[in-house]
Length: 220
Image 1 (cartoon, rainbow, N blue to C red):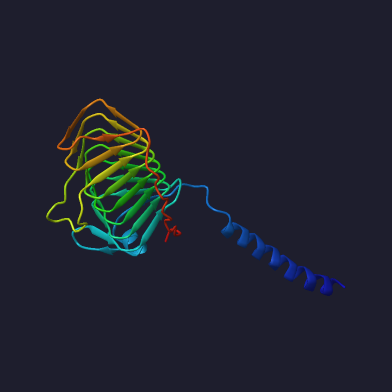
Image 2: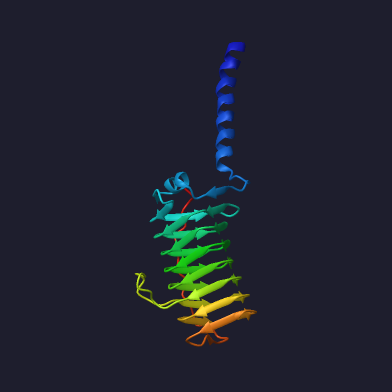
């Protein structure tokens, strides 16, 4: 009887251990994770890394809510980024694909967009933000240094001038240099200086904008 009971309890015990282990894997971690874009992490997300500390990404990257990605050197994104967490840039951050921001982006150095930005969160510029792409702002952009909305540059392969469409709030505490197009359908709080070759088009009735579906990928 005792031998038979042990034989029954042993597999039951093993099943319980496996079940607990599976539950542990299935439950998402509640702890925030900070990532630094060094060679190891660049390779981990499928990017290529050079000796000049340049990470180039051609695929997709998702920064999950509660997580932080710090850019210490140069990050060139030919693919897409979905940011639900925090991105902090201390180097050169060049976005050439589609960047969808539902979290926060803090630029402490140089941030360049030649692609498309959909901002539903907060972008804080503490240094220089250059745009020759499309910026669709539904959230908040705070400028504490300089934003340059530029015409097509000789080095730019996007083939177009910069366009900023504001459906949210832009707070300018310093300088916005507009050489291209800014369409305002909501609020621009200007405490600093706005210089432009073309006037900012402003209306209270925004056009109908078709929502674009952006693929979401799991963090690699």
